[in-house]
Length: 454
Image (cartoon, rainbow, N blue to C red; front, side):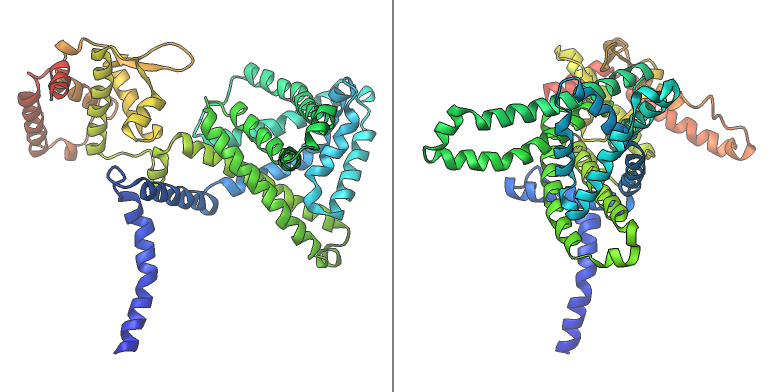
């Protein structure tokens, strides 16, 4: 009996864990929870969603795609950067930076770095010709374009930047980016070697703090690079705090992964025996994959930090139930109308998403229907804000619901006899009469003001 009870208890553990992650975790009420419990649940949700993105999402595929593009574009990218830096007389610093990036590969990193630098030296831009020069730039731009596409997918953005805007962004990345990186490295090195810094370093505890600061500089430079890309490349306004959180986690993960990868390479001598001369390339590709995966994970974290409502609704698709659509419709007109009546600033789609704690992908169809029906309008500008398009005092709730219900009806009106039987028509008419009788005399402004007074 005891053995049977223990066995049943043990066998029930997987089911309880599965139930927790599939149901309990997502329906927990955080409004009344303590700060510690709320934070724990939010972090657990985030960790689980990231795990699902890794195992069932497109992160792995996009990381693999970037590995392939990097192999094609790395040498041309470094060649273009080399040409730019040569004009500033700091082109000799590109090899130490490349070597630092390849440090996790150990001795194989030295070999790869040497080969890459030889390839760069062999590129003679002057003898490439116009076609060769165009192909050189194309391979470089294709890498940046792939990164932007990956970020746009992470941020649920369907439309990329216009061509000319993308061209200017990419050109500034290629020409200004290397200069800023090496300028920052040069300023850091100069500061550390300055006589005043050396004098301060001789005084404790400042000396210890300066040593610790020097050890933190590589981490800070890595985080700054991630932060710059997270802010700059996605075709949306990425906020400072989410980008910094994503960059910090990604930077620390990248450095930590470098330590583990160094140990992995040191203990994987059998790769040389199995793959012979290809072992270096295979190890390099694995490291590129790990690096890109961490890079995309950081972008995913930044997205979820900026859109916390998406963490809870990660399982939803663009499909909505009729009941949810109607509830969302009323919530949107109430929020938009309330702010308009009170004279508060209009909200963007992102702000509406935050206020209602509903992902933007679920808001878009309803906002589009409300715009088509003429009840709201989007203001002009880089970021659209929504305001009422009608006099709310002279517009009834029935007019709103009926207009949105009818907006797509003409395109998909029933034609078959099975959809237009007498029984069905009578039932639909009864539903419409009930709505009309109960909501025709209630204006939207009256409805909102009644809620405000209470």
